[in-house]
Length: 162
Image (cartoon, helix red, strand yellow):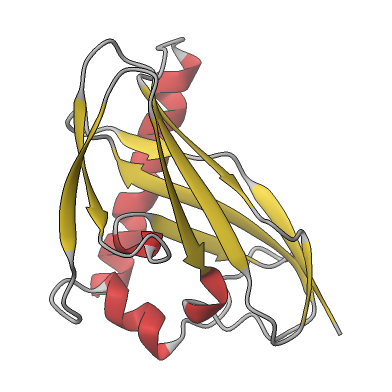
């Protein structure tokens, strides 16, 4: 039941974000993702680089994890194979998706206008991506500036080869 509710909320939020962008509203904060390696061997760590940029004219306060390499604590990372299916979630991935399952280190950083917050994640720690194929990755996070707004990153592809 929880999974259904969460997916319904995620779909509704994504539709709201698409509607907001379609209306021409400029984003005040953006998320851009990239992968240091667009192609990796099965079993190798799959790294993701996440950059949040403050395009507003005001300081924003952003919670982040103490470890730069654990961005998944404050970002919702979605991965889908070429058929649109999410790969299985690892034990660690399950722990971080449910509040209270694992303790977090929290820091609050101030992002001044024009500044960027750069963080990393090893998505192969979150998802079982041991099957060869191409995976689509996208990241979302609640806006630190606006209530009820979910920020959505660009979409990237990562290919896992034998």
